[in-house]
Image (cartoon, rainbow, N blue to C red):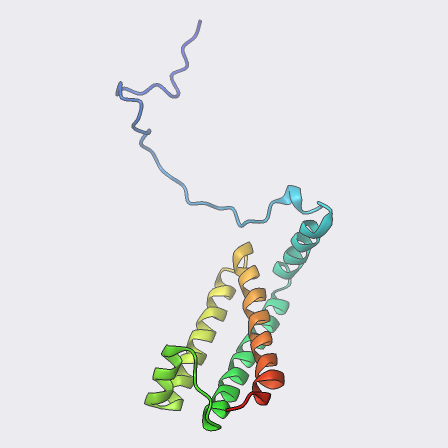
Length: 153
């Protein structure tokens, strides 16, 4: 009977792991086996894979996110001039300092998010984040336009 020496440790304490090089995780969250799956999950996987494979589409979504962020800033400032109160305490503090300061910070954070999505666009979660944040900003903008204007100040 041959003895396999590939995993034999010198230390009798087996709780300690083997020393060696640990390679970083290389998976991106796109499992090739589940791409053809049916149902909602399969369609979502195919949509994300198509989205990932089209960098121009990603750039278009990120540009839309930046424009929605700017529109939210303008509509928020308009509402504040009309007497509304800012609910976000950080933005309220920045608007108290100066509206330009609030605008710079808001746009910088939005562009930082867009940059991070672009840098990590090969990862599933980054693509899902870009779609989710853009949908959230579009919903917020719709609230500003359709509901926020009709609220009593």
